Image (cartoon, rainbow, N blue to C red; front, side, top):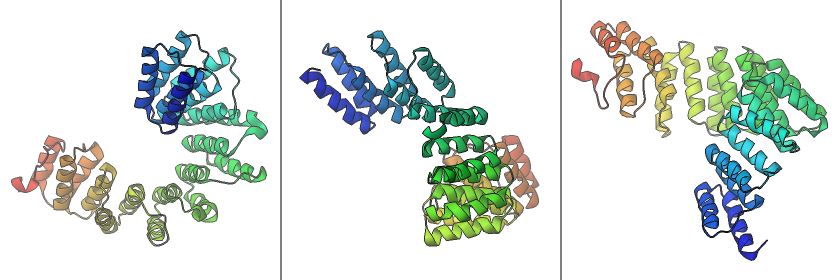
Amino acid sequence: MSRRLRKYTQRLTQLGIARNWPSALQILAEMRAHQLQPNVITYNAGIHACGCSCRWQHVLGLLHEMREVMLAPDNISYNSSLTAFERASQKVKAAQLMATMQAERVQADLVTLNAKISSYAQGSDWERALLTKSAMRERADVVTYGASISACEKGSQWLSALHLLEEMCRVRLQHNAIALSAAISACAKSSRWQHALRLFHTEAKKLADVVAYSAAISACKKGAAWQFALELLRGMKHRGPLPNLVTFCTTMSACERASHWLVAIQLFDELRGRFFQPNLIAYSASISACAKGSLWQQALHHLSELTSQNLQADAVLCSSCVSACEKGSQGQLAIQLRQKGCLVTPGFRWSHVL
């Protein structure tokens, strides 16, 4: 390798680690302009930088370019590309790339197989994910198990998820937040919220991970166990980890679904007091709570707010606004909402039509 090429390669490697994909592509273009042929290492650095930023189209372009200049992509090239497709939820592209690897007889390593399982998980193909994991035998690591449990979660296979957690113990692999959160969600999706909470309290709570807490609160929501959801949120506020927008929204939804509308509205106010920007889920839960409490003015105020933030009211949210007006004896407003489909211009105030 020439001194000049080595310098470019080192610079590209640094950009790849920094995930600075625009600069990485610029360096590759600069090399070509100076008639300096990039090698596999420089291309891999560019693919890594683009892949970490979910720029899967650029990844495809670089792979194509490698073949055009008669460079054969290696394991690192393919693994970085698979990771890019996985992060961008491009499961079809990932499957096509794995088929290309097999056709070119590129040996799949642990990173490749883990990416393969993650791709199956994104496609809710839990059976193929578990088959791939089983074929790995003793090669499976914590990432393998986390991806496999995520596949079970998406397929609502709660028993398989729990069996994988038990297997991790048998092979002396430490449970991590990803595996535990996925297992908790798998239980919740299958209406096994008690199992989810038991798993959280026995295993996940000590990790103090916000994703695990959110998964447990979501399980409470599905099981109409709003008191437990509130208890978990209080624990986060007092002992950590600090709750985020997801945990607040999920707890609000749990309380609203259980018809504890006042608590849901209080949580919405607390959310704003913590300087979180409400999203559509938060507004939807709050407006539904307002409907149950016949608070039609507050419901319409929230509708105006979310519209001013360029958020689009969906059918469920619109129905809640109509219900709030009907329960508040505002039949005319309810008719107007139905006619408008809750489509109001930014800055619109319902006080104008009262």
